[in-house]
Image (cartoon, rainbow, N blue to C red; front, side, top):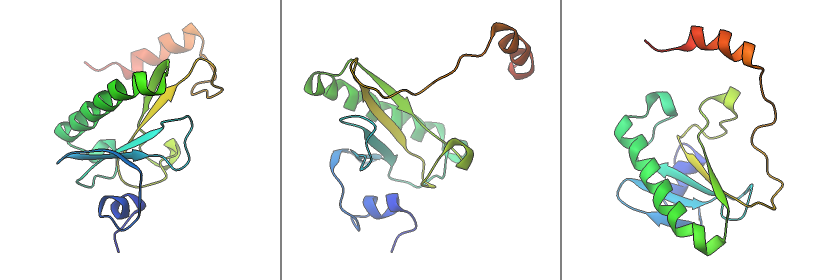
Length: 133
């Protein structure tokens, strides 16, 4: 048996509702969707998270997200999308296998991703520490 739930889905050991597959990625409906059409996109090769995933693979994940979003836009009559990738336990990554959530958004939907806004002084102070040179 494979290591994680996503290994099992990828390897056909667990059933899934696949919406897209090519040589690099697999996309399937989330079993605990935040909204109608909430889709998970995984690479065929295993990487635990963002930090160990090669740029080429990240690019393939985003290409798939774009392709699926284009397809969903009219089919689901959605008003927008969130693309979410969580790396690490503190970010609520539940499966140690990099994946992207494509979450269709609806004007009438209650789903909220962000809830607070920092003040400008805090942002100005923080940016000096975080800026890449």
